[in-house]
Length: 310
Image (cartoon, rainbow, N blue to C red):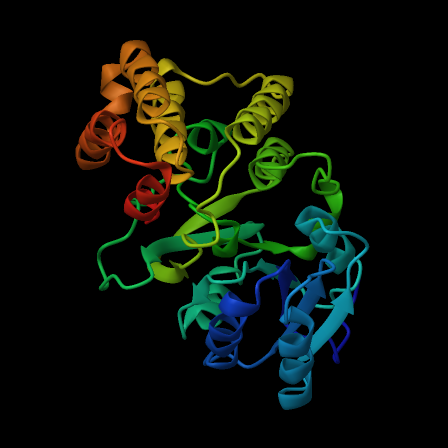
């Protein structure tokens, strides 16, 4: 199919749900891109705050921004809606609060010139970190389902850019999952055989920790179970180390939401029992999680949420 000369190179999909306090800095990071051939699809998932007004302001200030009202209070549904509206060759995902590094789209443009590559991602830095302090060291292979089931190197969906055809071929995000629809879809993307390659450069800053503070553990477990079922359809099952990593992450989420410390400690100890090697794959995080479970058991819930929302 011939490329429409009026179509942008990239379509950035940015779903919004009560994200007014995070949205402006994300929009500014998009406007600061050195590569200019892109559009941004802002889809409001029926927000109750000032999100719609911020979106309208972005559209008025920059003709590359387009605003839409989503079908429900569901970001997965907002992403699904956006994929039918996107005009670009490539779809770059973005979540409110996360930031694109200024050269992100320029770097991706070069990486995706390879016709054998269906998508790409790079390093993710914490919001205030210096260069070189990424969450994870990038693997030296194409993205695999096994990597996604363990210490997911993407960290955030904001780190991914894919060919539009790859998105269309993998089906919609699962709107029935309260948590984990991104991971479940990523497993389908890789399971379909699409080649997603790492780019050795910092491309994204993760800045949504404050929004993610209240986490429903049952939703997290439900999302994980859905991802495991999808992975099993492609013949892939998690290793004990993968499960230990996920339990360590779940224990931290329990601390972050203010759950009683003994609950978080119990989850962490389950991970340690399953695979000490996997649990201590990130020693500092493992030690903080175990220590947090012990210390937080004597702290009030409000103080636990403050201490462990990072």
